[in-house]
Amino acid sequence: MKLASENFYYPFFSRLFQMLSAYVLIEVEPGLDKRVLEAVRKTEGVSEAYFIMGSYDIIAIIRNASKADLKSKVTKSIRQINGVRHTYTLPVISDSDSDKDSSA
Image (cartoon, rainbow, N blue to C red):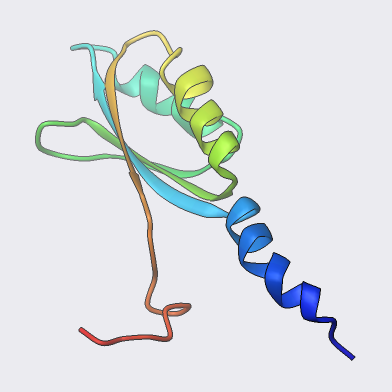
């Protein structure tokens, strides 16, 4: 039997403990790309990292992190790696597997 109060608190707690995934674009100082990629791949919470072409040099993927963990991994881990010039974080807001409302 569900309590009426469970329905009241559910939206609050589901947002509070929501797990996020994000893509982190990383611009690297010239000549340090291999070293930075190795360090990013060793960073706790980074599930994948690759060289890319364009304005950024590396893309890192962080999966299943809380907002606080995501912020910490980017600001206190990835940005502190010697040779990282700039980062741009792209949080995933939905994916086709879990997004039931496909009204596009």
